[in-house]
Length: 515
Image 1: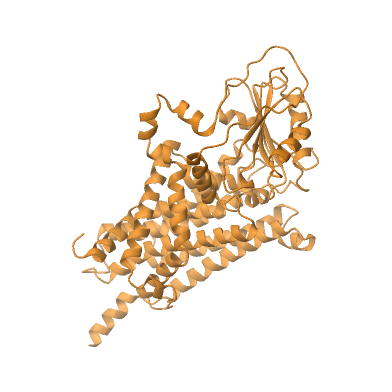
Image 2: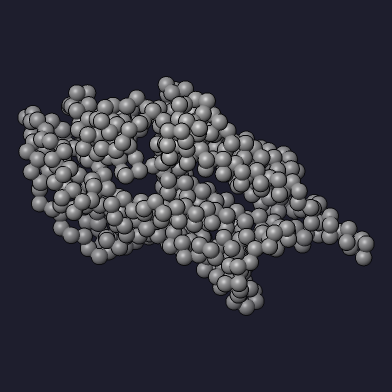
């Protein structure tokens, strides 16, 4: 941290960007994919057809649970948003954990019929990996991601201070210039979406502010349950009376909720003690119906369908928090704005990746013996290859596993995710054993082949392949396969460029020898 302000900020920018850069790359990749999580889930369940109809879906889900789980402790229904078709429902028996609830999960199509689709978590798994990671306790994972987000915020601010020509860099991109090209790419991807990077990093920290800054809650409340009751609303769950009572029309309740919200749709239905005279039906506004993601919950008497008094209006602090979470998740965004989110997320991914590569490109020429770098330098080089190419190949494996794993296999969603990490781990081995340049070429080529294989395998294993989808006008399935081809092309191009890149160190030594 010696020298003037810019020199100090440059040092800070370099090291906070490097230390957790590999974790930030994972966060950016999975977070960017999450902007199309509903579309990813639909592609990963090709058995689901038809159009969205939330009333028919809710009626079909309740009818199925009345037949198979009439005495369950509670029913839960997730209604499809504008970008989905199927209604997801499950019930919970007394004493069951969340993992056991999933054994009761099922899908209902737009006609209200149960669908026997392959078990998958689809895009939701990538969304959860964005902040919960995998194989780690959730609390530890969120602390790690929160620390990486704090480092990211420091890196953004210090980067702005460091770059005197930040606006000139916006219009500068030189190819084939080695380290200069990496710096141009890093600057362009950072400046191009700078407001987005600031917004997404800050709002990401806000989403888990109560975990990262718990002292205010501890000072004002004796326990966290009381805080959550005040902040997000919570009432006591009804108890079974022992008297059975039929359930009123859920369609009428949905329409009443829609009228109350001036056209906004419900997204979730929760029914504690179903079939009992004390049962209630809770309808929560869909998260995509407004920028404030924490929608209002309306309560109805299950037997009569009469709506209880509306909850009190939310305070300014809770409303601000809800809007910030909504800004971060982007579920409110229409199609064009969601693509803008997605492209800015890709720019952030490129910013992190080029920053990691730039660290090694800049220092290689400064090494006493570039052919025999010190351990820390070699470690960063290998981690760059393993993370950038390896994670992307792992995601391709995730999609391939969805098509290739047997439909009836136990714990199928977990095995899809396991294959993501198996593919990633295989390229980590390649990155460790091969020379760096060859490792880059080979891992990027394998990742390109992985994405290229996705539409091919889709065509061989389902009746919704690329050409069939184009013929039928199935825009979503055709678009997904085409995006896989785009990513395959980009990764293949990167592998080709690395293969044809001249060794800067050897060229420099040759010039020195000639001189």
